[in-house]
Length: 586
Image 1 (cartoon, rainbow, N blue to C red):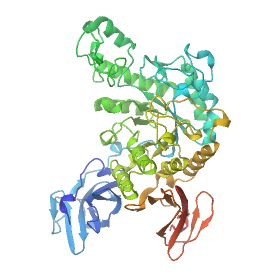
Image 2 (cartoon, one colour; image 1 turned 45 degrees about the vertical axis):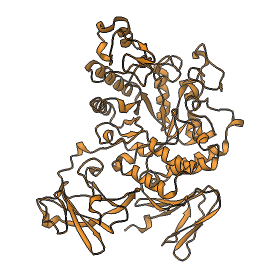
Image 3 (cartoon, rainbow, N blue to C red; image 1 turned 90 degrees about the vertical axis):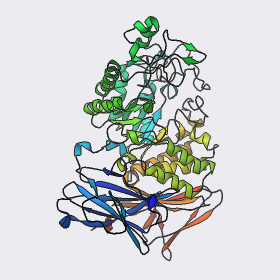
């Protein structure tokens, strides 16, 4: 065995409380190097009476390693533990003191999970597991009230650029709630709604007032009430990394320089403030001089922004915040933000915009979730570009799953595209078959799925600003077949709890093969998803012991033959099978 590949840590995603009674342990070994990993667990105060040896399950792999996982419910909520690793005739043990070929004397030197304190358990809102989000860019969704249009409004459907306005507003969203209800989504994420000069509103001027071209605070409150009546949650965009250049505090700094009482609200390197050769003399979002960066370590700034966060939770019964450029704000601020938001609404869902590994924010003291762009990159890389085979795709997804604790994986914000990326259909070169495979994976994978407005009717568009096209409301120009497909998969997910919080595992993902099989399983149900990501027809075989499978979409019974299922698949085709496990429960 390659002992140097062994890893376990008593922190973060390696040893953590999943709930008030359950501890999850993970262990890493070299890929295909060991036969079994066991956890030896017990209470250090009563080791002889409580010690158990239980096998871990290999739950994921990447290119180099296998990852083993186990779930434990210690009687007294504390646990000492070690690992026993076997391969052929060789057995070794790993405890906190190191690796040994002789069984160590317990519990001294073993790893320790001292106690599950419920207050420390990372508990994202339960409803987020069941949420299917719909992202709305307000200016481009629907113009419900032409009377509040900006003077320079363009005709609906004009090609988007960085500055033009189309007149979409909150009344337009209110008018289309029944459309969203028919589609099946049960949560909305709005890009910024607050007063700002741009079409995107990420350059906020007034954090406590809805932009007048979108409506009023009262209309937003009414919209949220109507959403809640329909079972739709609402999440707004918080732009706390920076503000707009016309924000009151920055205007004062621009006018008074270092004598401004707000000078320390921002990171100013040189007074008077200026932009020279494209580089501002103050920190900004990117190098955009019209978006000065807040000093969130400043007490007054912190109090101001936290008051904004609390205000909208209380004012309109907001269900959560999406946090713009979250990785560029200090962790102290986000810890305070979580306390304030959760005090105002313990069920609020907090999503950070972090495009990379986000473990530092997903430990229970800051965010509930992040926008999972690594997911969209890996999924589109496999289903669209064909740059990787099934083996590599499974490795990539396994790596992502092992990044975070299970409860974070269950509510991580999965998407195929957004207002910051090209449209999914465009990425797919307008091949709907490829898009459908990606949609199937999105809706049957672990995490919280999100649809970018208009993807369901075939909207196309390249990188920003082209992706921010106007929603198509003419039924003759909508792709109704694609809409029905989204609706079908949404309803499948909503109707089967196992697709929302069941365990995930690849069953087939081989080198030089673009065909995959994976499963979702819990105590009640078992799903198998078969995918043919090739341009030719194929038949996939997999050993199956039982003969109680049905097609999850058609209800047609599927018969096993000689202990296996043989599933014919069309080019770029899929099949979703399910069976009930309830009758097998004791």
